[in-house]
Length: 447
Image (cartoon, rainbow, N blue to C red; front, side):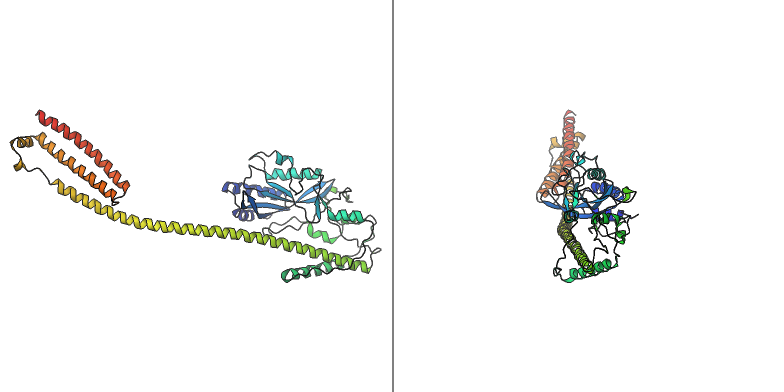
């Protein structure tokens, strides 16, 4: 069993989802792929409200049974950022050799699937696993796509196609030209190695069905295993898939166990009684042309995927550059704040020193008894009168201290927050001193 955790984790790390949605999708995608082994993980750019976001996509084929024959339907499942409040986007993804069944009301012309579960989607209750299972049932009732090759074959059968002059393949260059030459030589070798079979008057479709998994044609052996998930991300699946004809029922298998039978694409009829050396040569040319077209499609798809990855990397690079500028600005502001704080601390120390010096100087300013007259002297010798004078001096000192703090705060010598806190404490002490002074004054007068 392939370990899907690192693949899914790597894909979700690059997607534009919330952390909660990433955790939920991780568990859900594991369940979906374990149940549908022909799906693989990709990242694509999706337009959401005039902006492009990186989202997760599952692409591959869904095996279904239509009239007791198995078909593989190519699909794409896209998870939007609003999932699971809104359903995922499910598309039938036909290749150029396929056409969409226009009589299937659940399939739109662009391939988007609109089955009942999507129409009646329940927020945070339904899952993509349920959607895929429901889609399989819907596809089994009414096939979503047909094969263009089957349609053209049925219309032209039983007439034998006339030999066409060999058309030179389009000129390619570089890596593509080398790949085309390699696959052309491989196709020729495979065509020469296949032994011709007996004549089959029933047509090429039954011949293709017999040479499926239950037949003897070795070309099908390489396509029976499930898709491996160890392939690189965004690599397209290259899986066999064949579809019924529009105007006829799908071919029936000769095997007794119909449920395990798979209908594969048609192969040329290598009949020794009907084909001459020139016919074999034309078949080889046709196989070479088909292989070249397949290589070209795979190559172009790889280029498209690489361009998407390059665009994603450019977006990430721009984001990192913006984050770098923001971090540099924050560091500069922090350094400036440290410098300003050091200056404020020095100013505060100077202010505190000046305040202490002023308090010490004013604490020695006691009334001179020699300058008092007789009545003042009597009041001064009265203990209550003496206390009154001390409280009066303390009151004046606190008032002067508060004025000095206000002036220092206005000149930005002391931070406003610290000045307000100190003023609050001074005013509380000043209030208590004034109350005591009034009480002592009344006692001194009564005595």
